Length: 146
Picture 1 (cartoon, rainbow, N blue to C red):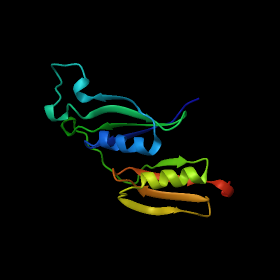
Picture 2: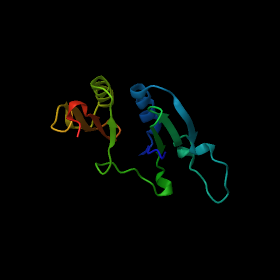
Picture 3: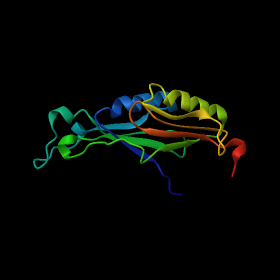
């Protein structure tokens, strides 16, 4: 079975974001690799200011899903640009789980597009941009099953 995971890019605050996501989903990071951990290469240098930034980390949400992340390095020509082209949709098994994840993830929210509530397509649904610029949807279909 193929699994689909979300890979999130940040502009220097990946570690802070994943520490926050740990408080939401629980568990521990599956590892942290920093840019300074890369083997030295005489043809490719990493600026001293970027060596402590996150090259890769991951957090398991459940047995089937995880989020992974990295900091973008501007000297490599990278910059994370946030918007609403992509959302992470959490399709929950219960209304309690929907409420819990909504309440935890929406702390210090940048934009609350749709607060958690009933819609014609879901018992509970919300969409928002979290404090790190990541777009989320929380969905509990419940009695609105298609």
